[in-house]
Amino acid sequence: MIQQVLAKVRLRLPDAKAFLPHAAALMIFAFIGWMNGFFQATRTIDNPNLKETWSVPNWAPAYIGPERAMLSALDIWEGGKKPQSAVKEAPKQAWKLIGTVQAGKSYAAVILLSDGKRVQRAAAGDVLPNGEKVLAVGHGSLQIDVSGTQQEIKLFKPEKK
Image (cartoon, rainbow, N blue to C red):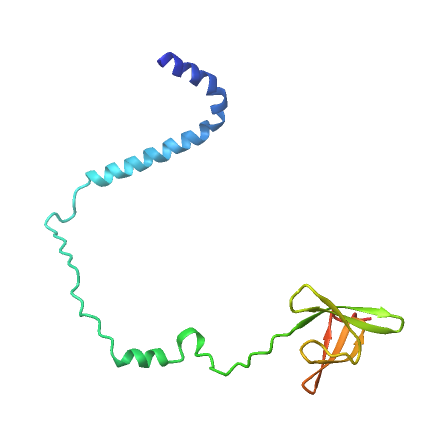
């Protein structure tokens, strides 16, 4: 048995020589740590009559009264209270502008309907699925009339020349 272990050690010894400095440093620090523990354990006690009398403090039971409501209402939590305003929910748009096509000198908008499967073309004067009227279609832009207000939707930012 010992012969087998020695044979394996002799076989792996050339590979282990590169780790010899690391092993030596590890052994030195282990020896220093052991010596520190040994000297700390064998030194004399400064005051052998010292008795440590620690006890667990006797805390009063928690009292949560009207102060809790007052403190929670202060504007110090999370940077202040957020104003509670009635948020109008925008109507779900029944279409999405995905492109424009040119036929001669006129443009038509290519819109994707809300089901995500159908595509429809819309030219100036057409009415979109949710009742909005197409006012004009240009290269990458669409102008619509939404409840009497004019809006413009652009596919991309215009280039600065």
